[in-house]
Image (cartoon, rainbow, N blue to C red; front, side, top):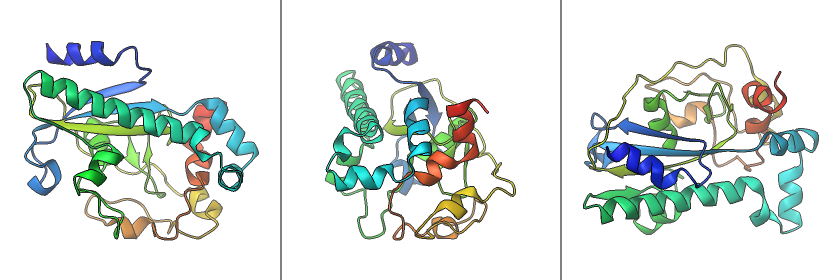
Length: 228
């Protein structure tokens, strides 16, 4: 089965999860007429989360010292993007059509809108269909196992895969507003995600400084890092 071939292809690459997802019911402007998607993910280490918890200005420090590219988050984002590119190449070599949604490929093929900071089919949308988690008030995916401490990328394909397609989970954020309270530029609005809602209901991406605080201080991420 192709699913097993793909898992074998990726098993030594340090992935923490891979999901095979049916995206055929999405609008064509999102799925680009591909029927399936593969979701690849790598978790940030608990040590990294604990470090930023103790040093919340960590990202600002990395920027000031010019060390951003050696940061664990940046490195794992780059790695999962690379693996998505490699997986797309692998599928094409097997005779299927495939499209990597890596950052570079989205930019190169014109599927990332720099003005609106949007792409047609976000990884977290596919993750929701995989049943991996829900969209938090910070507009990031939240998972029971890792909180928001994950780096993801996806590959769209017409390869015949055994897939799942689940209903997106409702928010489990409840009355928690930590991400909104800790957001210095006030980019997070404190609203619950809704399936018919818009990104702007949750966050103002043009105010976001990518400081990672909302990711790190989410209680689900803290539970992953500290076992609380």
